Image: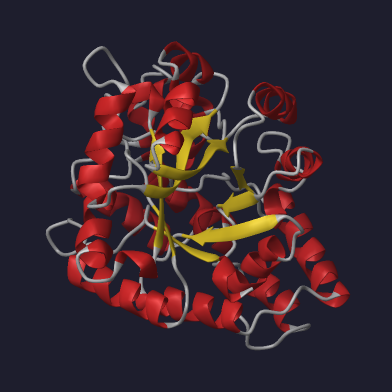
Length: 366
C-alpha cells in the first residue's frame, strides 16, 4: 500500500514573491522519494507546476526513481497550439522524454467536443506506440452516464482519474460512488483526486474531529479521508496536493503504516458526512480554474473560504479580516459579480457560482 500515495503538484508552496518555492518543493520531493514513494502528478494548466517538477525532481534524481503523470488541456488547443505542440511543450517543461502516465484533462460535457475535434484520443494512442506515453487515461468530472459512454467508446484507456472522497460519495453533482462503480465494471484502475476535497476534509470543526478521535485518537482528519479512498478495491493511486512538509509527513506516515478502515471508523465517517452535508457550506475545492477568466478579478475560492469559515465556526472577526485582505490585494468583492458565468463553465464541481456569490455577498459585503 505504501506506493499508493501520489504527490499532487497543483497546490505547491510559494515564496514571498508569489512564485512556487523551488527549494521547499525540492525538500518535499526528496522526502517523498526517500520514503519509497514515486508518483508525481502535474498538468499543462497548473501554473508553473511542470517546470517546478523539472527543477525539483528531474534535474536532481535519476529518471528510473520516479514516475510522472501530466495532462493535456483540450480547451486550450487551437490552430497553432495543436496536440503535438502542447505535448512537446509539456515534455520540455517537465524535462522528460516520455510520460509514465498521460491524461486528457477534465473530461466533462462542455469539453468532450474539443478533444474529439482535435483527435486527441488517437493522438495519445500514437504517442503510446512511440513510447512517449506509457499509460494513457483521462480525468473525469461528469456523470456516470457520460463515463459509461466514454469507456464504451474508448476501451483502449489504461486508467481513469476520479474525484473520490467520503463527502462526495453520494453527491449527485460529483457522483463519486456511481463513477467508481462504472470504472469497476469496466475493470479500469482508478487514480483518486481530491480525496480530502481541496482540504475541506483535513480541517474539520472540533466537534467533528472529536468523532474521529473517539475511534482512533491522535490521527489527523486528512488521514481518515486518505484511508477511505485507498481502502477501495481497484484504486491504484491516491493523489494528495501537499503544500507543506507537515502535510507530507502526515500523509507519508498514513501510507507507510497503512491500515484499511475498520467498521467503527466507517461509522464515525458516516456521522461526519451527515454533519458536513447538513452545514450550509460551499463545496469548493479551491482548484482555481474559475479565477483566470473572471472579468472582475474575484478570488472566488478565497471568497468562498471566508464564507465557509463563518458557516463552520461562527460569524467572528477572522473571516471578515481574511476577506478584507483579499480586497486590499486588489481582488473584487463577491458583490462585483456581473453574472457572465465564465466561472461556472470552468468549475469541475458544477457549482452555481453566480448565485453563490450573491449569497456570500449578503454576508461579507454588508
